Image 1 (tube, rainbow, N blue to C red):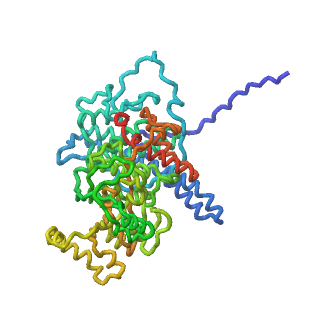
Image 2 (cartoon, helix red, strand yellow; image 1 turned 90 degrees about the vertical axis):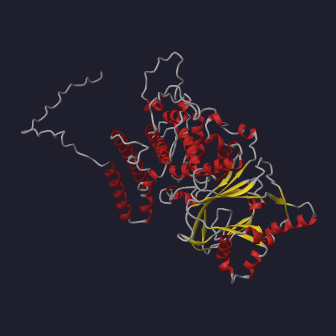
Image 3 (cartoon, rainbow, N blue to C red; image 1 turned 90 degrees about the horizontal axis):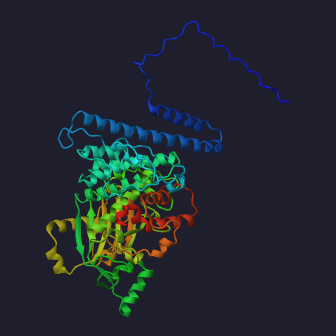
Length: 573
């Protein structure tokens, strides 16, 4: 028979001789949330330095990565809390957002640059698979405060699209200060309602919204959860605001006549064949007026546009966004969410600028390639366009790839500071002498003399290069961008970098439509809900998974085909 358990009385607690008085609540013990993270990093670093063998050091890399990741998350949270507290304090003190004495939180991008974490993995389940549908007979939900409406909605319920005003948000009496708070708190529903009512996100609010998105993505990853629909919703607002801000900045434009190769006769065809085997023959191609735009729907007008401040210094910081110095969409496994989102934000800014400049529907423009390019003095390029080298020979983008219809280069550092040489140069046929004399101002002639001074004793090769040509140089500066039509009217080259390292982001856009059959072949086709859009952001950009080259190529191809659907609300699909 089983043995019956014997009840044992618990031991009597010993009574201390004297009971210590409790700590007075008037003097609470304060703990800096960063202390634990820093202590953890210091401990792991100590163990790493004291490791006796290379194998022991290698074994410490994962704990070190986890410690850095935890510290990054903590620091981002602390920064966000400090900003929000400062802004709320300013509002409580009666500061006006429009007055000269207004007190506002300092933008995250202008604060001490955060250390970005090393992401791990994401859950791959869709929200619909994780949450049961809400029954039709469910009881009514009590009234919810404005700031928490977005969080109170069921995960499987599509949130209002960016351009559709929410019907359950009372925004009466709310101001730009409330918009700033809602953006910093990732309250996409209230932000949508306020923007629909006529308010606009200024640059400070836009930066706060961006870092709130970064924090939301990092939090979802840390908790191994799907991305909330509020992430793409807030990104759509950020993209809209970015273009509005850019249109208020300086722009230098020049209209040019669209050109394409004239290979109708045997001589033209032969010269075109020479170019295939000899880059220097490119300038000798016979041209005729007109836009080729093979397979696409380009604007009939062509131009060159220079934006001296396309991106701010904070947006081109290689300390805040270290991975954008060598970024490619094919290799994202170890790239921080902040850098992925920021690089995508810059490319989307270019796409919207092209649509605005050339009067094209936004949905007809898609990125075909975008990456970071490093030019290192004294090196020779190896491999494709992303390889290192110190110059780029004369070429036409549309001749390089028939699908390149619009081009852009964003500069991440400045000539004369981090490197010398490396001018971006438009290379055109020289106008007739009488035309040249009448069209140039004294200032232009002086600038031309200054540019050609280094070539006064140039090599025969350089003299041949300049013979019969008009060279228009642009001196790269951090945050500037050059955007232009990709046809033969805009032949260009990059002169040799003579010292230092030059960082740039070339990107190319097509107007060729994606066949509908391509979406049908995808595992998940065009997004139909805001949750679908968030799911695409996760799986095509932010999943941080190891991939084979074949898997990476397939993912990037799907990313570029779905770009418009990911970067705009459902109402614009």
